[in-house]
Length: 108
Image 1: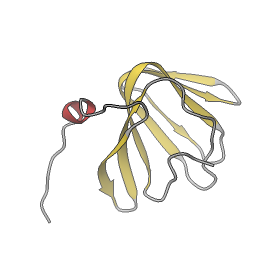
Image 2 (image 1 turned 180 degrees about the vertical axis):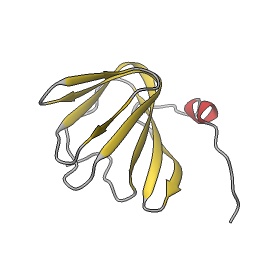
Image 3 (image 1 turned 90 degrees about the horizontal axis):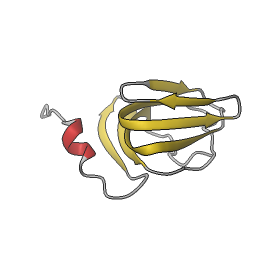
C-alpha cells in the first residue's frame, strides 16, 4: 500500500461550489473530509454519531438550540450525537470534519 501525503492548501483551492465535500483520508472506520462552507446549511442532527469541525480557513458559526458557537481559523468543536445544529459561514471557509465513514453528511 503506498503511503502518500496530502496538502490542505492545494485541496482547499479545488472547491468550486458551496458545501462541496472532499474525502481527504480514511483512518480505520473514520474519514477526514474537507468542505467549502459558504452561506447557511440546514438544521439537522446525527442520531448515532458525533461530528467534529475544525476551521482550516475562514470563520463559521455552528448554531445549536442551546447556543451559537463562533469558530475562527485553527478552532474546532465536537457536536455530540443527537444535537441539532446548523453550520453557517460568516465568510467563505474551508472546514475539516472528522466523522465515521457511515455518517450521512446531510444528517437526519
